[in-house]
Length: 228
Ligand code: DX5
Ligand code: ZN
Image (cartoon, rainbow, N blue to C red):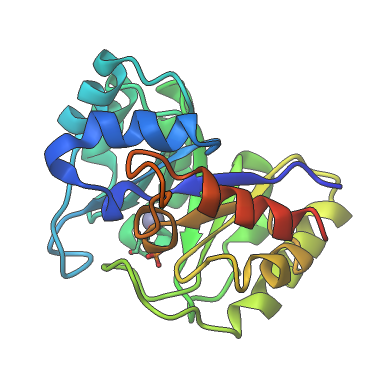
């Protein structure tokens, strides 16, 4: 069985007590913190920046932080996120004029670079970049908001990326983002995905007995993954 990782998107957490929410979701079995950065320019919403990433590190979060940049331009903000403690920094290729340079900037800053593809964005840039990145992130909704419906044709795209990674023998994570929950996580895993972002599915479903815990929903997702 491949190593599956669950990455709750803090976009759906309670921002008024974000440190606690992140602690709670990690203590409930999550592997990675998915950190959605929106700029009201590349996407029509505005969220959090490097100061919040740094605050989570200062709060004591040691898990990988997976910074998903939905910003344009990209390069200006990369060093700030590196300093703030980002582990992965992923960006949308169409938001950068010079994709190779941006990947290099992220790597030089000490972070793991990744490329993000919107549902209808073709994968052609992977031809020259797949061996230079640590993560491919496939959007299974149009970026900008949590709580949207999973777009099923992205499963075919996932199978194609998995095939590209395996046929070249590369160690690249394949992550999916948007509309993932216990009802479809198995199907997504079977398409070759190893890292699963889930925002509303996780943060919208606190344990019944303890509203500070998310073990039950994360456990349900892991039980589905165990069937893969
Ligand atoms: C959307 C974000 C996602 C979002 C996913 O632009 O990139 O990470 O939080 O939320 P759900 O899991 O609710 O679809
Ligand atoms: Zn995201």
